[in-house]
Structure formats: structure tokens, C-alpha cells
Length: 113
Length: 114
Image (cartoon, rainbow over all chains, first blue to last red; front, side):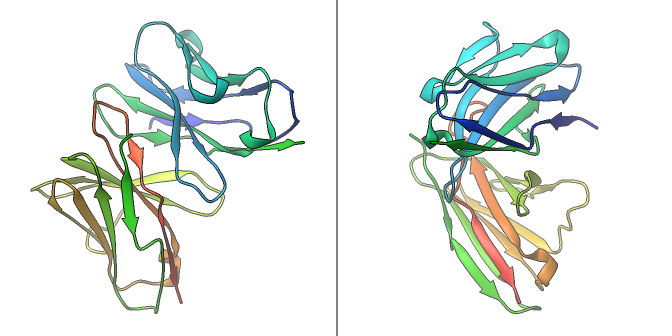
């Protein structure tokens, strides 16, 4: 069965540190890739998405992600995190022409001021 | 931006009763909505795809007679948890998409069954 893996379950960083969250999926066909963020007490919000084209995509709030097809990965990065980035981050994948999303298990990020 | 609302945001019910959760797309029409379940500190698991004017499509392992979905209009889908039990306690989230592939999520409904 198709799956999405996020290997970092909890990440703790100090402000201004760089962030990279891993996301790998298991599917050999066409994929659409997403990163969502869930701030404490709030609903899921889209950070960025990849459908096609440039594998380096830029999202909101200074986040970016790189699609590496050969590695089945879509890692999320931010060069300098802020305390306000404390949240849970979910990688999600839809496959072929399906609209259904398969989510990773999520990564809880805590940024210390 | 597109807005999806859910009602109620939190509901407590007694074991054996039924609970209805509403999902509305406020500023767009949605022929398809999705229902997810999120356990504490876990990811979202897709329960079913709600299709306007037709039957919902349930994911493997989801009891369709227990989780009744009705997509009555292009802006409203409802999830009814029938004969609720404590193990049904969870966070239920719906989503819809106004354009291709980009889903917008509701704020979720926390169900507690006592």
C-alpha cells in the first residue's frame, strides 16, 4: 500500500536555526506533494505544494521544499526558524489523478525563543 | 481564500446516541468533500469521500453503517456517527477543494463519547 513517512516525530530548535523535515513516499507513479501546517488550536493550512515543473517550490512564511524524484522525497526547509513556527507539520501526497490525500504521521516542531 | 467551516466544534454525547457533524464550504461549491479522523498526536486518516448527489466512498476498514455521510448540496456534507461508543471519540476534520488538488480544511470537530 502507498504510504508517506515522516521520520522526525519531534524536533526542537532554537530561534534562527535552520530547519529540514524529511518526507518520503512509496509510490512509483505520478504524485502531487503537499506540506501542511497545524498551529496549536488551529486548522490545517497549506504551506506549499508541488504538482509539476521546478522541483524546488517556495511556500508561505519562508518555507521551501525540494522534490527529489529519485529519492521519493519532498523535504521541507526553512533557513531560519522563528518562535512562531512552533506547530505540527504534515507531509501529504496524492497519487495519479486522485484527489485523495495520504498524510504522513506529522512532525511536532518546537522553537525555543 | 476558500473557507471551510464545521459545526459543532466540540460535542460530548453519551454512549449509544448519534451525533451529526456538518461541513460547509462557505465561499465556493464543492462536489466532493473528504472526511478525516485524527487521533491525539497522530496523523489524519481519510475515512471517506463525500460526493454530492451520490453515495459516499469509504476507505477500507471504515464502517459505512456507523459513519453515515450525506452530501445534500454543493456546500454541505454531514457526517453522522451512529450509536457512538467511547472508541469513536476523536477529532473529525473535513476538507473540500475549490480548484484542482488544493484542499482546504475545516477547523475540526472534537467528539467525546462518555
